[in-house]
Figure 1: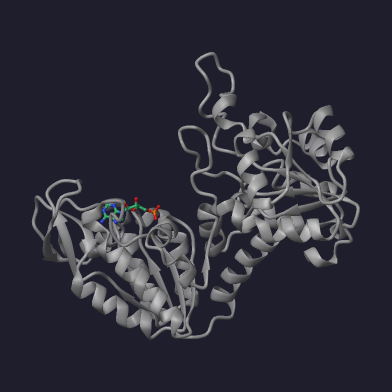
Figure 2: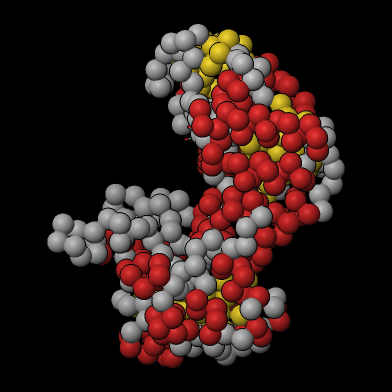
Length: 402
Ligand code: AMP
């Protein structure tokens, strides 16, 4: 069911959002991207005369308990974002100290059309991560309709993201605009892309990206591999990688990926040159061919020849998927490759290519480079997007179709 098909006028709509926003030391919001991304759904519902009950998690309160085993409410309460949220929504947001108790129910029933109630952090309750049915039924009692707009947690079978959906028949639940756009962009890239399609895959480990690579081998024309994971491929082919990141137990696997790529007619390109240093630290490095890194050095970024070669392939593509940075972009001395590729992806997009920055640290790299609005879609769901691209069925999505 689409959001527009729900008749929500005068009704209570329970909306799962991802308001897991970073906070400053004084607990004010330091980055409001996730709130801004949820606004289209929330503004639409308010305009339709619905009242809104928002539920979200914030941080991992169960993993960071106080010394006495209690929840650190000061740090993890969603009350911290009420003022910031009210400002962005341009209306006062009410707050319920509990996510499912009498307080929450009474407040939800008293809401007038257009009014908004934010529930306490769903992860204050152990039942949330367990996907507990009883807990989910009490959450479900707070709304006449359920809308899921939290793509970032769609890969978790939690009570507020998945189990709760079971309590709403199909005509009373829908994805929000954000979640819908995330799925649509990933489907567009993998199922019906304009060709040629290129995937840029970076990040730390091959083992984290095996499933993604295997799926890409069935869908794309070209794969550019960079970041820490590239060294395992280079070593597997006999290159000298010094002390660069390497997963020796993935050497065979990387060779089989290269072999499969050939069989599938997929071109894989690895870095030709790397900026290297003796230690993992933020000091200027030295350039070496990617397969001739001295024994005492590690590669921390791709070099200029690689940037040039990768750029050419990107600019010749009609669809681009990027997951994972191409170097240790958190270090000023090693962010050149990642930022250069971000610029090229933006340039290719300006020329008409469709670009999806799909999950992981490449999202924060593109955000930091200030190019977020120059790509077609930048995902809000790190782990969720990776799993979706791998072809997994996400529980939060499945539950909406049942
Ligand atoms: P992932 O979450 O798998 O996308 O990995 C992101 C991390 O990979 C970032 O923290 C990067 O610093 C790291 N990374 C990228 N390139 C390298 C490299 N050459 N050596 C070590 N770590 C790297």
